[in-house]
Length: 413
Image 1: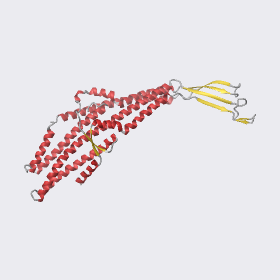
Image 2 (image 1 turned 30 degrees about the horizontal axis):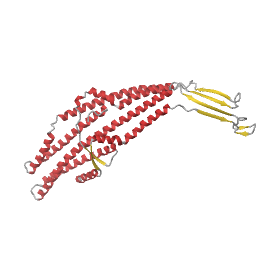
Image 3 (image 1 turned 30 degrees about the vertical axis):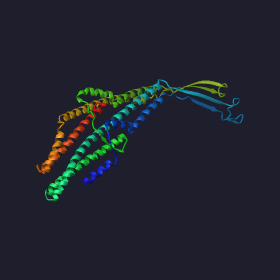
Image 4 (image 1 turned 90 degrees about the horizontal axis):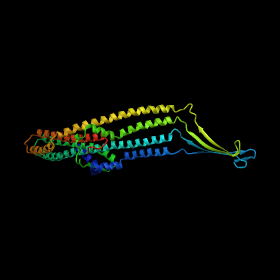
């Protein structure tokens, strides 16, 4: 069953073309193709269209009425100049108290918020992309390390099976070797399943499910964390976090809306001209008309109260967002610092020494210089060492990416 699972995993992987890719190329493809980003861009266009609409003036209104039936002349639709009657009016609504400019300001702020939301979505999705990229990179390193030892154990297991059939070694030893091989294969399959899940997420982010992406490494490595004081990172977050900028813009929006609601309590004025053919005190009468609501009852009191409350609410939400940003930066900074220091405490040559020693252990076991129990115990130690080393490397990269995400800017590549 373990062998079958490994084979099936290989089929899933090979069903797609393997493509080696750098992080920079992956980001470029993500920027161009991600559907969530493409959809969010439309929100900016929609918000900008609202600014155009807010700048438009009210259309004039044309009113016309005519005689339906002249009972004296028994003439329907009598609107002739000699005997008929018709009335024509043109009216124009004029907004007062600066409502138009306030609506333009409100729409402009709304468009700015839409842009901030887009860039914050970009920050979030880009973090997911980079996080998945590093996870895939280090899982592949663990999987490849497993494969080297699986290949070695397959040869050893085959040799022990032949020796067991000849009676040179016991069945117990042959089975223990094969059991160790199957354990490594099963664990490698678990790593491959994790890789497949991460690949699906990466393909969705890059809008490409026809390639199996293989990261190409780290490049020059991250910059030294110690050169960035915590307060400098917090200040950078204040300048670069678009969710914080959106919270600031929301306070501006609520204040602008409050001013607009207060302006709406002032009624608008309707001016017009009217021509009445023969329905007034004289024929061909001309009039100047004016109309305005009398604000005796509805002075927009409810909307004004709600807008005033929203101003106070937006201030509280802004303070909450500022505290959230500071806490996220502090948390990410401490985690990144601890992980970086732990990794620096490891001897960089330890892993290579361990791998070299493993080969020596395998050779000595084949020469019967060490027991099967010692051989298996060392293999278990090697496996734990490989997983721990790659996990620690991944944790460092993930911690740096979390710090980039918290700051809102890529400081650590």
